[in-house]
Image (tube, rainbow, N blue to C red; front, side):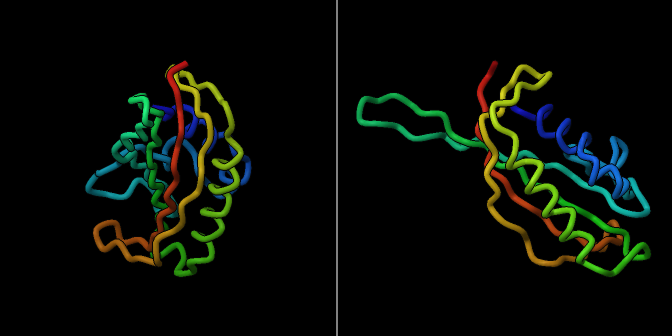
Length: 142
């Protein structure tokens, strides 16, 4: 499912590390009642698989899977969405440069294509400002 490649790439990026992101603030499918950080954090959500395309010969071609990454910033930390925008730009760079990378989970990411960003949002549950970025991921079992 390519989770390992994506997570490892995010956690290894020096720009994101400098912004304070680590294994405590980059989380997969987080749904806790309290935010995990008093500054910034990311939540990675893997969506349903695309079924792929079927050709005239009846063969199924590999589809893609969407990942949506939510970047949250605690309101008391900052009210400047530029901080979130900068993180999203770094994520685009990090993920777009993943080409044929094998992961520890036995899945190789063929490529990742950015799809776009959400609007500026406010999450009253976590008391954060947030935006999301969406990506198409093509992978294969290694």
